[in-house]
Image (cartoon, rainbow, N blue to C red; front, side, top):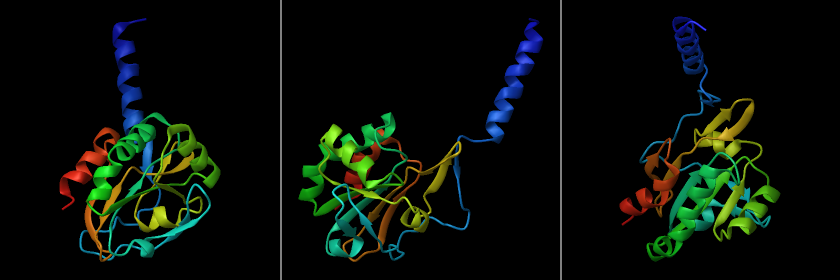
Length: 178
């Protein structure tokens, strides 16, 4: 094959891939909450089926992290980083809550397989993911974009991280917790 033709095909493929991103936001009207704003309230089932609400953690720092899919490489790294740092978060009066659009059963399997002891919350209806401006897509699949929110003890957004790097998630949050 002619090297110029091959180069043209590669350039065309890259241009198409750039025009159709693999990860995309689903709804432009679902804005990411900003620092100082009251955090959207919610109640979602955790991996054991028990309802978990933001209100029950009033008086504590809440690390609310959204992630795409249980038991995938990046999500597993991120979950392990939070699990490994859990004693440090607890010492700073903080709780970790992970949210994805996966089911309660999927979360239960993930927690069992990876020895996760903090709450993973199921949002298959996308209500909380949307309220936090974190609804996205991976090809045809609806996912939660990898965003993290630090919510202060009074229920306000204290810090926002978007497009989080899984390996840095826990350390980035710990660095700003008082």
